[in-house]
Amino acid sequence: MSWKSALVERWRNKRGVPGQLENFSGLEVSLCTQNARRVRLLSLLGSNTMRHYLHSLSFSWPLGFFWETYFEAFQSVNQFRIFWNRHRKLPEMDKIKEAIAESLEILQGTGVNNFSWELGALWVAVKFVKVPGYPVLATSPFVNESILESKQLVSKKLRGLSCRKWDTRGLCATAKFSLADHGELEVLTTPTRSCPVTTMEWQGVIGLKESWNEIKDADINEEFFGRGRTPHHKEHISGEWETLPLPILIISKASKPLLLK
Image (tube, rainbow, N blue to C red; front, side):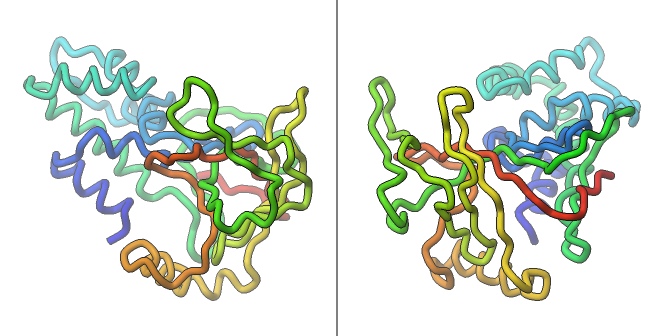
């Protein structure tokens, strides 16, 4: 069973815990520009798309319970924790869990198709204008310091922070970050005063489609047995690190546009 299926099953059986919704496991896609960014599951559950979706189901909220309060709770981690603790022993908690389960259920079928390699994303809103250009993904990788090729990227302890932060001023274009079986990232532009962000291009692995099962096996070996992969960097989804993940924009030059359903 995949992590996504296990999560849906837990909430369907009312055994989900709020911390599971704090992971950056969601992808928010702009229908106007096709740009996307990694977000917490909380953000997806509180989005206008999910609001419209539950409304389309004629989801029945508890008597005296305002649905607006539910959606406002997803605006931040702290707000949701306060909301959850306030209602966890009240009768309407079952309905709150049901709303979360319904939302996760419809999201289970989204993501990258293993056969066509196209992206399926949920949207329940209407008109949009397509803007030409390459799609961009805003995310942040966890950098494996032991395999950095040079001292272009260094971490520094900043005053007032309990962890370290990356200093990208020495980073040069063409620097590469290996993602092992998932390809690599190559730096296109480095941060400047006018544009303080690092942009990278993703390069896939030749024959990636054919080796999908082998990649999944390698992921399982790495995750559960700690073997089967060469050292690499990986996308930050959850957890806390001594050195903060590196915020970046990934530009895809795929010849085929994203498929949104």
